[in-house]
Image 1 (tube, rainbow, N blue to C red):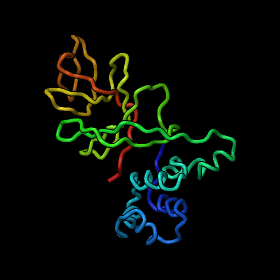
Image 2: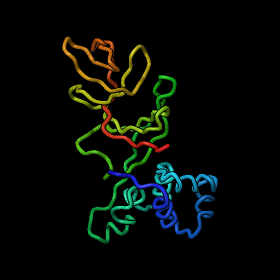
Image 3: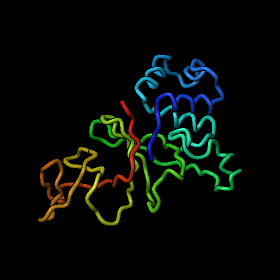
Length: 192
């Protein structure tokens, strides 16, 4: 899924809220006028504003984020597609190497990868990324994981190597020294 930012995003936010000016939008979402101008100039995708708008208005998150699909949930029903279901997911963030539980977040079910049972959202503030993770994994495989090593929680890429090791950032770690917390199955990243 490719997110669309800049002027197109601002136009969709204006349309969703029913506003005709950026001043109205700025007052509603609580950012400075210069912030919206920067979004336009830098073709920035304002993910937090998109999610808040979807929650405020009921407009399709997919349409707000990409410009594709149906404009509102009502339009989806009128076109005889299934209504969009919103799921509440557990949400945590990694703060100073520790996993901190936060308030649950809501996300449109159609945006979630299928076939996963225990999906949660974990934020990694240092890289401005929110990860969709699955804590119910059957067999550890290569990929991006939320791990704990030496009592520090991290998000890192793991590769299984011979001798029962995980290769992490070019270093081989014994499997029993790396606790796998969750497998990353998707991400939402803020453009800076």
